[in-house]
Amino acid sequence: MTESGLRLTVDGPVARVVLDRPEVRNAQTPAMWRTLAKFGERLPDDVRVVVVSGEGPSFSAGLDRRLIAGEPADGEEPLLALGAKPADVVHAEIAGFQAGFSWLRRPEIVSIAAVQGHAVGAGFQLALACDLRVVTPDAQFSMREPALGLVPDLGGTQPLVQLVGYSRALEICATSRWVEAEEARQVGLANIVVPAEELAATVKDLTEALLAPLPGAIRETKALLLSAADTSYEQQLRAEREAQQRRLAELVGSFG
Image (cartoon, rainbow, N blue to C red; front, top):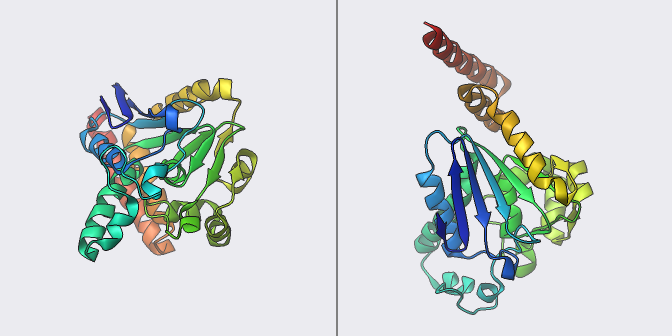
């Protein structure tokens, strides 16, 4: 499936989402976010791993500059045009944009961002929406929204804090500075840094490793880890008990 500068391919348990606008460093538009949401809605139930990557030398340079500069782009109105709309309309529109990113965190899939070159603004947030990030030495992350008078609103704030902590997350966002690959690895933004020529093979190996355990075990484990930071210790112990009971019941049923 190809739509709005995006490609989706599904090969059994593996889906691949490719940002395919290399001529503008995979700059994003609201149409792309709506299409991403459609991809999530239409994903076959047997997909277990989703790989997100960008065509060409950059993962994504963020929002299309024309929309930031007050110009229409590909039929989309400038970003600031939202500011003249009623609050409930703005909230609904942004919620629709966020849906293009949030499905990557669903417990039934593990998502991998394969990042090379720039991952700026919406590109940074798309990488953050994924569970794992494999990056090349030239990868550079930057949260540019505050520099434009805006806030990151595509779901990137929570995973950023979870990965690097509040203080460092604030510093990264408030300064809009570049976080290069090695620092990203050191602070937990990147799981691994590999040479560009090894990116595809590394992602393939990681995908195969993620497919090895039973899908229910990965689904339940991801759900437990996602909830861990927001629950008390006793609540987490209960969640572990309940998840293990479900796993044991499923395993007994499969061998019965």
